[in-house]
Amino acid sequence: MSDAVGNLPEISVSDLSGAIKRIVEDAFGYVRVRGEISGYRGPAGSGHVYFALKDQSAKIDAVIWKGVFGRMKTRPEEGLEVIATGKVSTFPGSSKYQLIVESLEPAGVGALLAQLEERRKRLQAEGLFDPARKQILPYLPAVIGVVTSPTGAVIRDIIHRIADRFPLHVLVWPVRVQGESSPAEVAAGIRGFNAIDGLGAIPRPDVIIVARGGGSLEDLWGFNDEAVVRAAAESGIPLVSAVGHETDTTLIDYAADLRAPTPTGAAEMIVPVRAELLAANGDLAARLAGGLRRLVERRKTELRGAVRALPSPENLLAQPRQRLDLASQRLPGGLRAGFDARRIALSRLANRLEGRSPRAELARRRGRLESVADRLANALTGRLNRASSEITRDHERLHGLTNRMLPALHRQFQRRQERLDNAAKLLKGYSYQGVLDRGFALVLDDAGHPVRTTHAVSAGMAVTVRVADGAFGAVVTGEDSAAGQSQPTAKTSPGKASSAKPAKPALQSDLFS
Image (cartoon, rainbow, N blue to C red; front, side):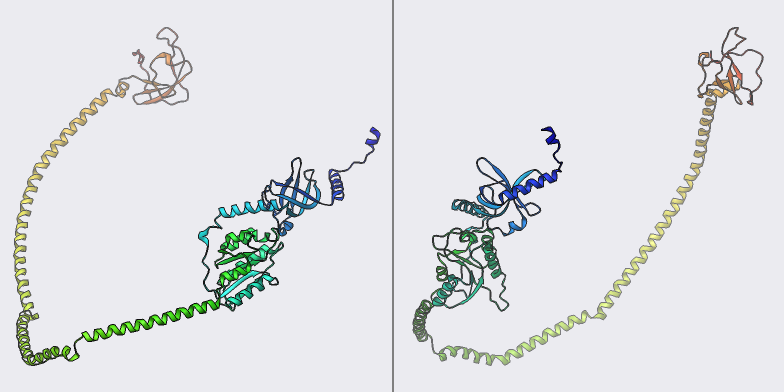
């Protein structure tokens, strides 16, 4: 047995994974799997969709490629029970098998209704079905846009009913009302009508009808698509939903401005009956004409009564004519009196103006200027005299201060000189230089500190000896014949010049005692 195993050929991991992949794909091919969608999080960054199908006891991974996902009529949703059609394959990268889904369909009407209710609640929460968004339909539209199939009975019924009631301009946006491409086409039709500006050859519709005949829930499923509902809610033109029969309900009915029970009912709700309008207009015209006639007769009666109460034109003009005659008689005398009064006032103004002529004003200004010049000259003369007196007094005061300042400065200088001499004498008395001048010496260690005791030095230590006129280096030898015992003594370093005087043979007192 071991020999048989040892004789097996070696294969790579990739070869083994590829063989398993071929076996699985050949054994199953296409399958239809029913299960609940789990772990769905939407398309990945690549556009592919990954999720899992599960039931009570098992779970299988599933993937929908990007191109297939874009063509799907039923999109995966978390928790939705579906029937997935595809191929079973393996993924060598993680040693697992998966279902490559090519189509999805809800598992029964119950699943569709559950999906429809969930979508309705979500769109309602966004406010797409809010009654405040509803627009009022025009009473008599001039152009009607219809989004429906161009070959079905629906468009013929709508056009026929509009022609019977009130012939109007109808624009048809042809779409498929069933199938995978239906939702995108219907949404594009609604947005296309809204994009028309009405400035070109194609007029802009005043109202839009989205219509389709009756059918099953699956047949009408395209009008539950989220793209269709959003396009209906965003429409700037009033929109009427006429999808299916009266008992059929789709999500576009909630987003539309008005829901019609049938496509024919939509035409009846939008377009009034022309004969009824003409009859109503005729009745209103007759009532208006009768009212105007009665109003005119009443105004004539009131005018006749007012005319009888008014006086005649001769009586109205008699008093004004009399006042005009009296005024004509008084006018010449009034003109002469007015002329005389104006002449007297002009003479008075001329006299006043003469007193204020430029020559008189110039003379007055010249007199005032001369008076001011005299006062200014007198003031300047007095000011100069006072200034001269003040300068003389200030000069005398300055001379007296100068005579007093010089002796005071001389006395101050003498006091400062005496204080300086006393300080110099005191400094000289306290300075160690005076001690050195008396023959003493100052010994400094290598750090420049004074050596105060014999214990602060040792044999061979270099020191500096400072005397009155300079300093020299020395080395401590450790011998002291004068004291009769071994003590450190300083020996002059060879090779160094010294400016100190020769030591006196007599003993001198110890500087460190």
